[in-house]
Amino acid sequence: MANTKTILVTGAGSGIGRAIAQRLSKNNYLLLLLGRNQDHLEETRSSLESPEKHQCISCDIRLPRDIAKALEKSKTDSLYALVANAGIGGENNYISGDRWHEIIDTNLTGTYNTIQESIPYLKKDEAPFKKIVILASILARLGVPGYSAYCASKAGLLGLNRSLAVELAQDKILVNALCPGWVDTEMAHEGLRAFSETLKITKEKAFDQAMADVPLGKMSTPDEIAQLIVFLISDAQTSITGQTLDINNGAMMP
Image 1 (tube, rainbow, N blue to C red):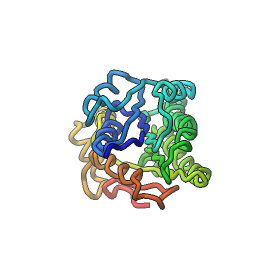
Image 2 (cartoon, rainbow, N blue to C red; image 1 turned 180 degrees about the horizontal axis):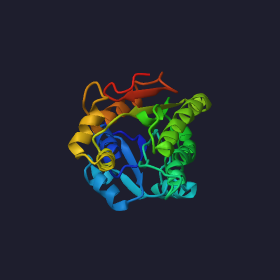
Image 3 (cartoon, rainbow, N blue to C red; image 1 turned 90 degrees about the vertical axis):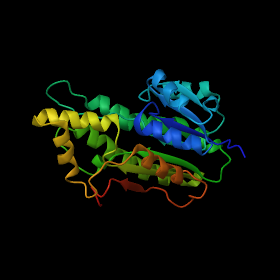
Image 4 (cartoon, rainbow, N blue to C red; image 1 turned 120 degrees about the vertical axis):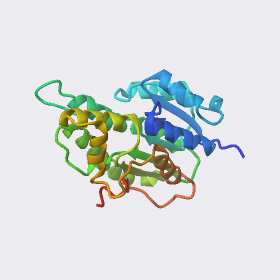
C-alpha cells in the first residue's frame, strides 16, 4: 500500500541528511528535501527509491520567507513529520572573522524558523500523532575551546526541543532531539583535518586521539542515525516526546 505521508527533511544535500532521506524513501514516505545547494539536493533525490515521487527545493533556513516559499512551491497540503537536520560546523573567533552569527543563525534560529513555518502544515495532517526530530550534537553537552558558537547553538536546540514538546502536545505533535557524537561524514573529516593541522600531526593520529575518548573507538554511520529517526517518526512511536537521545558510541553518558 502506498504511503501518502509527507516528511520535510532539511540539510538533505549530504551527510546525515542524505542518509535520512535514503532510509525514509525505503519506508515509502513522500519527501520534501530542503537545502542551500540545488545540485546536491538533486544528487540526493537521484539516490532515493522512486526519485520521481520526491521534491527538492533550495532555500536558506535563516530566512523564514525562504522556507515559506519552499513549502508553497511544493504544493504540499500537510506534513506528517519534520526532520530538522540542517546545520553548519566549524570554529568561531571573536578577534578575527567571527562566525558566531553565521553559526547561531543557521543552527539555532534556522531550526526555529523551519519548525515555526512547518507547524501549520503539521497541524493539518490527519495522523493521530505528528513528529518533529531535531538534530543536535554531543557538543550540546560539552565545552570545546574555539567552538563556543557551535556548542551554544546545539545546546539551544535542546531547550527548544523541551519547550516545543510541551507547547505542541495539545496538537499531538511529538518533538524529540538527537545528539550524535562522531559520525562518518565529510563534516567530521573536515574537523579531523583542522584538528591535525592545529596540532601538526597526521590525520590518522588526530583520529586516534579523537577516538581515545570514545569507549567503542569508532564513529557512527549516517545510516545508524537515520534508522533511529525512522523509529521516532513511526506510527508505533506515540509516547516519546521532549526527550534527547544520545548516539555516540559511549562517548557521553549523561
